[in-house]
Amino acid sequence: MLGEGILRGLAETARNFFGSYVSKQRYTTVEYPEVRIAPIEAARVFPFLVYDEGMKDGGRPEWEAGLRCTSCQICEKECPPKCIFIEKSKEKKPDAFGKQQFYPVRFDIDISVCMSCQICVEVCPFDSIKMDTQFELATDDRFGDLLVHVDKLAKSNSYYNSIHPSEASAIDHHREETKAMLAVKAKAAAEAAAAKAATAAAKPPAAGEGA
Ligand code: SF4
Ligand code: SF4
Image 1 (cartoon, rainbow, N blue to C red):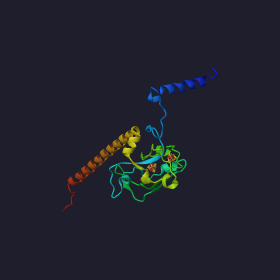
Image 2 (spheres, protein in one colour):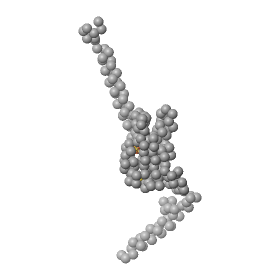
Image 3 (cartoon, protein in one colour):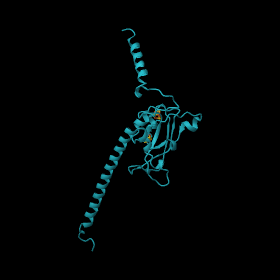
Image 4 (cartoon, helix red, strand yellow):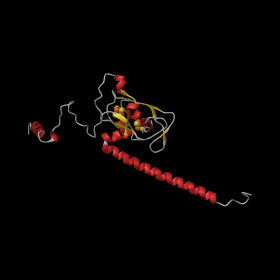
């Protein structure tokens, strides 16, 4: 029927208008900035780097010791507008699994160029880079505030859990499973090495040995 789409659209508008007086789900606008709606879990703005809390490595600050990023540079290569700049360390530091890894001595993101596509997040093999939900970032300092360095990009895993709880807790669970599996493997290897050493020690000396 001619005009059916317009009538359906008007009906939906009326449903939202009158429904907003009785249902919060229909109440879709607020008087920002006096009133603010908390960002939904799926919201994404610009990336940040996750660090694990409580890790220590010499005199490094906590964020640097716990940084998950291994400076593999996959995100830098895959970023469509090329707004990630990474410089890899010369030496390594232990990661949360006890493995020695490189880390970024420089990790900058130019958020004036970033298009929030999330490709960096999808390609990262270490669950290191995630999307932040902070959006009030307007500034007149182009390079001071919009070229964000690693110390400002680094945010704790607790913060990550607070903004993306489902995703972050699934990752935490997976990481705990990996840690437990590595601990079992390390224990089995240590036991095998101890058994081998004990067998070697108990072996009687060959003829001519120990004379
Ligand atoms: S969100 Fe997209 S554009 Fe922004 S840094 Fe990641 S890959 Fe680059
Ligand atoms: S954020 Fe992830 S993909 Fe990018 S360099 Fe670090 S570990 Fe590699």
